[in-house]
Picture 1 (tube, rainbow over the protein chains, first blue to last red):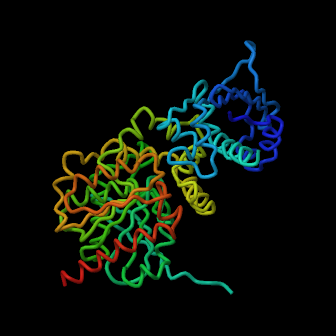
Picture 2: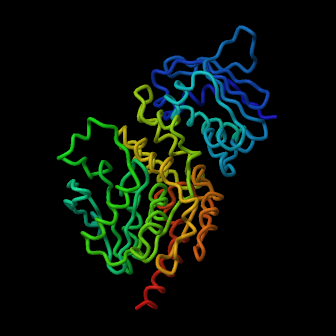
Picture 3: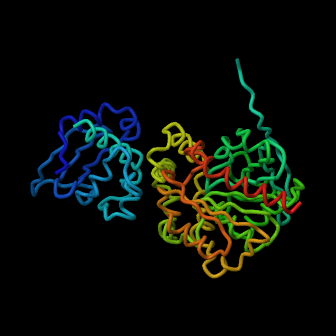
Length: 126
Length: 290
């Protein structure tokens, strides 16, 4: 099972210069489902304030990204197989999905793309 | 010690369909003319590595232009272009390249293009047999409607999405092992495209280009056809490029392992390994033809 240390991931995102630059002014609640495991990122003005790894019925989110666990395993490799190199091709060709406020997701796609890089680094160093 | 590039940049005042365009192009080398077409919403900087590669320029006169509204080729002064949405059509695209080649007095040049330029390579071979001794279509396909359907294209020129969105998507089209400095540079070039241009170019790339019924009419004894496609290109996927080559008797196809949608600028060294054998074949065929 793919799991992340949420405190480490939060710190890594907040310390990543590219993520901070590309997430400027971004306030959202982004739900990332890695297989069955949820990670709910609360982002305020470009800073990740909290990452929750459990959901309650009172947790709203604005944007959702999902993928099967075996797909995430490929996507998070240092050198992913074709069309796992990023969320977008994985959505087009490998059964990942995105939902919710997609205008917001694509407005901040450079930050989302960088978030995947950071998750990849976290996975490699776990 | 400063180094000087051998690339020479020039402007050409080129009439196309009664409109004069101030066209920027760069060239280097001598020999068989090799005309290079950049991708949608980009410019000739994508070809900078090839223009400076002596293994290529010792045998080829390499010419890389900026299509009007791209790079340093400004919109035409005579037109009220700001009053209508930009749209690249096949007719204009083909005519522009043919007029450019004529103005530069290129004799049966080789044409190589990537993405929309790759599509154009095939369209030129179909519509103007023999005008080019060979065409090289990078990431070319029979059609790519699935990548850029009209309702998706609206979002490529939309006031509520910034111009950062398109370059970020382009980054995802490259091979993960391509050097980061070149992937970032390719993305940077994209970030400088005028907001309307990507969507306008996609009209040709994603809607107009369709050679499903005509690719098989290409006579490769008049225009040789080479198709090269990147393993990681999620638009012109290997099966897309393979299907195109499969329709053209006598064509050449290679999958570019590890590379994505922008082989010439995302990983120039790797791309060269695939390109030089193609250029050698073209040179050999040219020698035989006298």
